Length: 271
Image: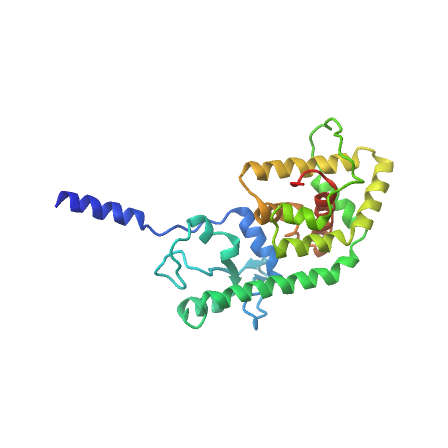
């Protein structure tokens, strides 16, 4: 009987339900991809309620799991780790009403449907960004660049020849970036001419400007690699750092343009 009790306790411990834990980067990615709308296709409810005369703006979003934390929960799936369950790829932002609907009527809202909702919602937000990116000018690019600069002393120059970068498509493949990251990079690369012009002009006033921008990127990249991030997770973290969640859309897009430029020209990502 004693052995049976021990086995029961051990078994129970092994099947303990994972806890909810969202890293700051995960939350920023979710909100950055949301376009401030519920991810239900027919819903346009904002996930951030606007400020009123008497109240500040408020976060009214619910974080919904596509595959539930528990195997017995809505759309539960055996074999997923706690990290996978709480990863932004398994999460979506919904208004409270639709979160209740998808979890209480989960037979009507299977995981495949929610994954399509999420993919379509991210694509819709990307299309909106693409339409706005041509509005980015020198001032937004310079502001974003200064925000990304390292405050560390300049290091020794390396032997990198910026005239011989790896082709973007090959570098994307080398770094195991999937379609979502690739689309964002290609969007930002389209503004490469404008980024080069801004850096050239800034360097005339401060010749260290381009190097300090690159050093800031390098330092942040190294930090994320040290955390174990790779592939899309690494790119997403850099995208958030570059300003993707900034409340000013132009500032957010300027950060993407700079990140894309640095991805192509700097020997930082795998090449």
